[in-house]
Image: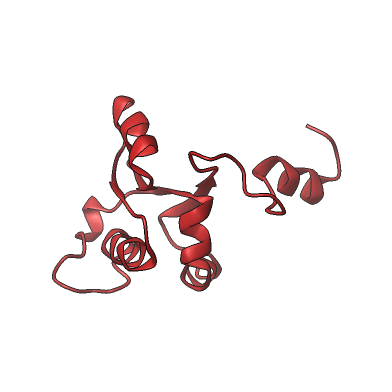
Length: 111
C-alpha cells in the first residue's frame, strides 16, 4: 500500500526514514498544490496518474486546518486516498478531536 505525507520538514524526514515519501507544506498555497497533485483534484499537468496515487494521505493537523474545506469535500466523496491526520511537530492542537476520541465517540467504549 502506498502512503504520502504532507506537512513540516522535520516530520517529513521522519516519515522518509520508514519509506513514506511526501512534501513540505508551510502555507495554504503549498498545501493545496500538494493535495491537488496527490489526489488528482486539480487535474493539472502536475497531477499524479491514477495508478501512482497513494492509498493513504497523511497530513498534519496544521495542514488539515489550512485545507479544511477541501479535506471535508474529499472525505465526503469516499475516494482514495484515505486522509489521516497526525499531530504536527508542536504536538496536538488543543480543541481538535484525536483519532482515539473519534473512535470512543463512535463505538461508545474506552480504548
